Length: 325
Image (tube, rainbow, N blue to C red; front, side, top):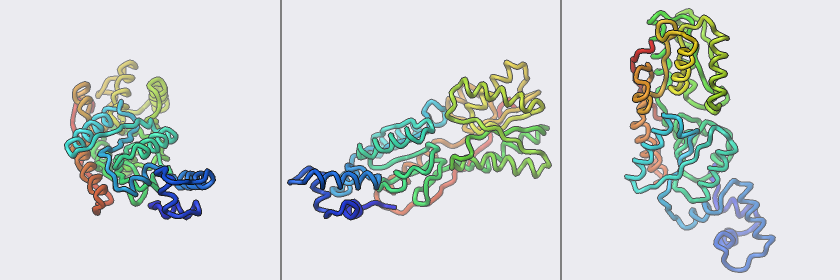
């Protein structure tokens, strides 16, 4: 839904000219009328600055990025690649780390709209945030489903999950655990687990999932991974759906004197540059960060210009064979 100036005026029970005068603080406006206009904007989740930009067709040459955390190697590298490409196109960026907190994400979203950014690239994993549905801002999502109007850029998550699981089975693993984030997050990344389940069933093996919340702090993750080892004492392989968790699982396995890959095989997902440097021996599904960033920027610029865009763009993944399988 696109909220227009007419919608604000209609809800407030005033003319478009009156709304414009309130926005620009021009002419006499009674406090009662001013209050009605601001209440209408708030109810419609529309920032006064966004309306003003719509009126005067201003461009700020600013783009907002909202991601779960740039501490994560993949999101950190993705944000850097996006910034580099946007800068070449004449845009500067404002970054918000949502930490998968919907209230924090709402706050960042309102702040970015208030700063009159020309568009947003979103990779956080919260959903049902009304502001995304009513804002006039051009938005592109990376590995996230927001609504039918917002285009998605994603790696081929299903193929990645398939490659990882088939590799583990080919190496003799039978008791394979997959880690995944909370299932209520609407993200194509869940296709990694879905592919794992399909391959396991095809090979007459029992799928077993273990939830590791992206937003947990390190102590909580360590505690839960240790619980995973206790819950599945016979597991001989783990498909961790991100490299940060894969690295942590490997670390805890070593502390428990479990040999990798002889006793436990591990496959991760992402293979960001920092992971390649710090843990090159980790077998992982590689997401093409540069290509994803390039597509996201090109798509956003098209949206800013009002050009037609493709609803979903899937980027191929590759399997990096390290020493953990």
